[in-house]
Image 1 (tube, one colour):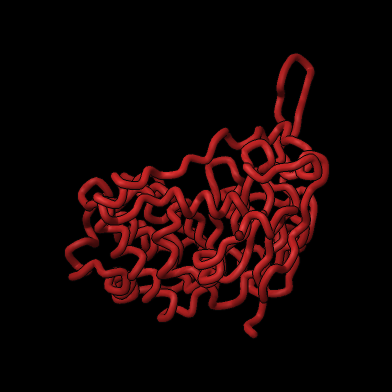
Image 2 (tube, rainbow, N blue to C red):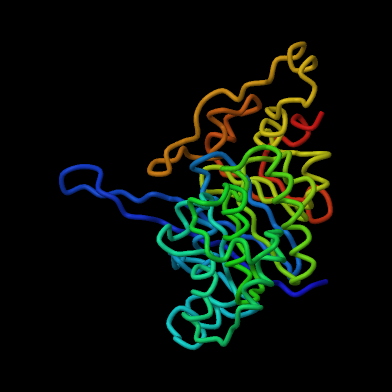
Length: 327
């Protein structure tokens, strides 16, 4: 089995906010998650807005220190990395990001060439024009010479995302986090970007942490899936298990809400609706956080918090009523 590129155990991230005159409260963005991302794996984190998945990506990037818990990268604790300048510099090279909106994450005053040169300059690494052109070649922007002197507004949305990916690959990282990498793209471009990511993963020997809510698109790229709800991990396991036999009612609801590809089928069978809204991260409900929306909820769900339990090999679910849900 491959080495653990990322190891998280009972990681929490709370933010203190003002809620009134001289009153403060804690936003429990991430509330005790555990996961292992193996080297060379594509680990996808899914959930609705407010589930905490983007906060997890910030923790993985070292942009936020965890409030508590253990977070390690190839065996080294993040807290130790963040206080050591040499370790932090190496960490920044090894862990790179592709953000959700390619337009806002690129400097509109810089040319594509200047954008791709920046990582080398920041880390004081020698480079030449052939390296920059090779990066553009690898992400499918050919001929690369045609794009070097263009600005961000002179290229399409899909090309901007390719530039973001090229920039992330410039320093040959070990881990790349992708926050909704296809959310701002047209449907046809989404498939192209996902195929590109699959090819680059093999070529550069990358480990992916992908944040997304577009479950259908994950089938071709995901190895493992972690489903989050209100700051908690509620289901986790191999992608093929999650898609073929989900156990948690929330995961089932997410999968059933996917529109069928055939318009006739879509008209004949209305999409199931998951009633209610996610709870407030400032004052989450006691017990299972999904019980306010769950059709199987009982008194135990309202009082006690379910723990992740193994239902199949490496497939974990946090639910008191697994037999009722999967029948």
